[in-house]
Image (cartoon, rainbow over all chains, first blue to last red; front, top):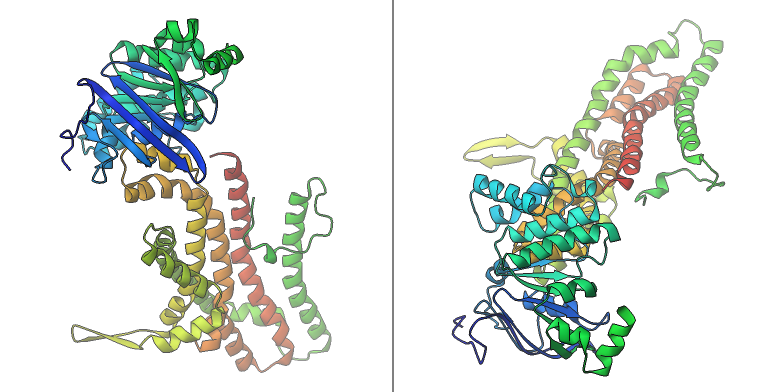
Length: 254
Length: 280
């Protein structure tokens, strides 16, 4: 199936388009018909109680988890197509996880360099230069030779962000990237994400940092039990939530 | 830290006493050395009391030492080769056990279980009779000596144990490592060889060294199928000397050699287990 040819009813400039996506694990419905569009350069935050399917949604978007029903199109590639080139898709979509998942047997710099060299087959010297540049970007110059075990959680998470950026993705997804961090290192990771967003990177964040979501997001989606309860600009969603479930959730976390 | 070969450890009635680990280790060295040396000395002393003109037992042992060591070297050669071959094949078998293809996974699992649960001596006999004594390669005849066949015989169970060690180590790597490799577009085989296996090596080394010590000790079984090694040398020496009172000291002396070779390996294993239990 030709990618791009089947842009069924998706607004022209959407980088990520999700249409009525359903997913269940056995008897548990995790996603019950999710739809959303993310335009180029948009910053979208997804909030909601634990187990509401936020992380699963991100995993569906880069095909780590197959969907049961519905359609997802990312940068012109139909993720839900059976002929999807998964590797090609994942080059366009970076994801950073809560547990950083750096490769512990490689230094920070090597962690960043591995995928461009071995997956994209790019020249090693060129990649090393890019990796050093990215280390500067996430404010970790001087830590290139450190192993993940020698870095703090916040530093590891920033290396993980740099590692994802080295693939030059079109979309970056962040799955509760600050949830496992000490409070004092949360800020440095959020700073990195803020700078990325300011550079025009398309970002999708699953987060519990409401203050950050309010500040950075163009749009906020509130999910509960696998459906989007309501969405809108952060000022509206946080300032005057319409749905009682949203109100209740915000009362709990704010 | 798990100990895959816990049966080899001595019975410990008061387990849980503070600081028992160091104490136990020292006691084990002392016990091992005392047993071997004691056996030799007791027999030497008993003999000295009754013997007439024949040379003393310790002197006899000393005189035969180069010959006995010449035999013992074969235990090391056979076990080292068995480990090399068994490790290489076992590695592949272990990785095949986690294959996504059922047609690969199932036979690998079966082969591993079969070889792991077969008596080593049976596998050894099997190899002695299964392998030809010579090969024809491009018109040249290449003989396969018995010790080489024995090494392959031991390589079979080694392969099965290594297969299990590899499979267990791979399973112990957190799922997040697979997930992030997948998200970075690594293929499955790239993920296994570049990301998962390098992290497994540290986890596997203690169990692998333990296996090596066991294979070295088991290599005397080659004697049963007619391969010359340390125990053969001991028997030849006894046959040449024709002295009944030498019987126990000679076997104790051979035991001492094995102990001297294998105990440092066991200690190094414990050391690495402790050191790598904390770091990651």
